[in-house]
Length: 333
Length: 267
Ligand SMILES: Cc1cc2nc3c(=O)[nH]c(=O)nc-3n(C[C@H](O)[C@H](O)[C@H](O)COP(=O)(O)OP(=O)(O)OC[C@H]3O[C@@H](n4cnc5c(N)ncnc54)[C@H](O)[C@@H]3O)c2cc1C
Ligand SMILES: Nc1ncnc2c1ncn2[C@@H]1O[C@H](COP(=O)(O)O)[C@@H](O)[C@H]1O
Image (cartoon, rainbow over all chains, first blue to last red; front, top):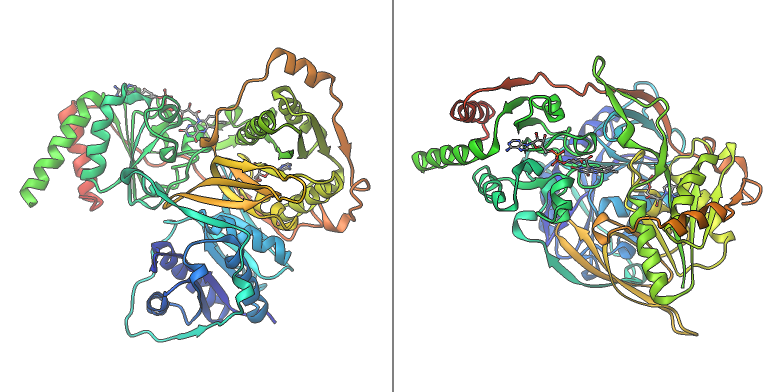
């Protein structure tokens, strides 16, 4: 019998990513409903502390594979270790993050294990009676939601979007078991050579992970005006998003693009400045918790998905907004 | 070099409209197009072929109308196009799609490189590429934003490819031996437009069609039957929010924004 709910934790330089805790809080509910243990799988190098942290955040068991070859994500040893672990422990459900790592690892595993995989879920639940995993995800630009099951193949696998739920709280008195797996060297061989990492420009980093996204559209008028967006992003502690029009004009590079052919973001606040709200753009941002839109056209589609819609000219509003935020900072300073 | 590009036929999202009254999507009579993100895979394949010579083949699985997607690839310059079409393929999830495609790839002989789009704009899973690579036991490099260098295999010397992957942390540089499967992101290139000559060649080129029997597949391993997942419910989320609109002076607008940010503890 297959048993238990797993999450695949993600770490960077030994530090757990926030999404690992989000996975724990989602999977906790599933494990409790099934009355089964919640385990986290942690692959990395010199990550014992992180393993303990996963327990504080809700894991009952942590399977730890620690090896120099796991320091960075390399599909071959990551897949080999996970596949071995799955064969040994036979989990019922595996949930991973819909990040570039999770979205590479999970389909390769699903193919090898011959099982179903649902991408980018925004909701996971357990079906009454059958105990099956109900995987709900948007499709066609978020215009349709589909609930998907994997009736007879195991494990049931899903990836979930970062920031689609709250991270689980830390409880330093929680206890659990860290199970260290020592695997033979051949499991760590790889066909790949990792040649290094080129950091993105600071402001680009991770719009998918940002709590606030200040997004800019063609309505900003000219690239010089991006200085307002940069200032706003800084004042609100946010990252900069862009519509495709802005990226196509070369005003911002592609990693900023939000939408159907760019990134999907679901921050707490999405501040859309001069974006018309084409359906392809909405596809990437409508999962945001709160949306403010500024646009001079009262009929702009973006207002349909906004909580606060401001009809007005960016040239007049943005400099004033920046001034106002700065004066608040000074007061609180 | 022998290159394969997997292209999907998807509904044209440009044509999808929202029903204002219900906030739901109107899909009836929506024409299909080649998945826009697959154009980047086609373009990259064409550039590699232009540099290294060889053959480039486009492969699609879908309804008979998916020939339109393949014609588009042909008009851009691919040499051959193969369509997997059969009623019994219908309803395939990503596993069954990748499985069916993998049978076709094996049947079509050796490829040095397989290129896929990052994801399709309808299903939006981005899973078919990596699943196909895994089924063919190929190294998979996802989110490729640039091919930095490549050596095709020569005699006993295996070839290799060196890429940049766009990840959350930055551009990861990675090398793999050929044959390999890549999924590419939009940043990789600017797809060419079909030329007049290309279009007329595409009209004349015969698209090879393969069925379940041609692939020696059993109905249990493809289509709805062969899919590990089942869609149990489909629903339309409400698009609209309870929007508060503000049309006031810039000063007042700014105050409303500040109030909103405060109310939600964002400042
Ligand atoms: C296959 C496909 C995929 C696509 N993928 C994406 C995608 O991933 N992401 C994406 O964003 N788009 C995507 N698009 C493009 C999309 O359809 C739109 O063209 C694009 O989003 C428009 O960007 P925009 O809103 O910045 O520009 P516009 O549509 O030009 O809108 C500019 C807005 O700014 C307002 N404005 C102008 N001046 C001012 C001012 N001074 N003050 C205030 N407001 C002002 C205008 O009223 C207007 O609403 C895709 C299209 C296709 C066909
Ligand atoms: N039916 C199909 N036929 C050919 N290629 C496909 C098909 N479905 C998906 N692909 C390829 O896999 C990529 C990812 O698709 P998806 O997993 O559906 O988001 C696409 O960009 C295509 O390159």
